[in-house]
Amino acid sequence: MTAHNTPELRQALQQELMALEQQLRIELAQDHHFQGLLQRLELTPLSDWPELLSHWQTPHIEQRTQRLEAIQAALSQMDLGMYGLCCDCEQRIRKEDLIKDPARQRCHRCLPSMPVKTSTF
Ligand SMILES: [Zn+2]
Image (tube, rainbow, N blue to C red; front, side):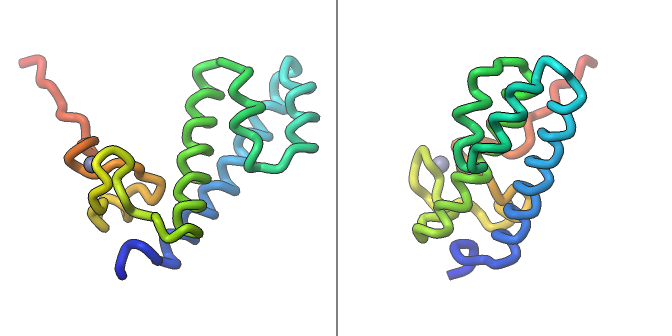
């Protein structure tokens, strides 16, 4: 199998996950409102972060949280041998799409990778 068990993609996901975790720590540390949250995150396994973060509904945190969830979902799908299947139609996601975004959950038919740019002309 090609895209289903690709060490490079797993590595890319794990690297992004670590980077995201670090980024979140840095961002939260900059705002004293998040001190309590940060302390709780320190005591929480990364896999439970999305649940904890979901209580802080700033658009920025929400965006990061969604990405965190997508990466974790992709990694656990790899563990289950379910990686690379579209969560809507269950068709295989094209490898070129997975290389662009290893955390991708939908195939190119269900979710076009590039939004079509509308010209104002
Ligand atoms: Zn699909």
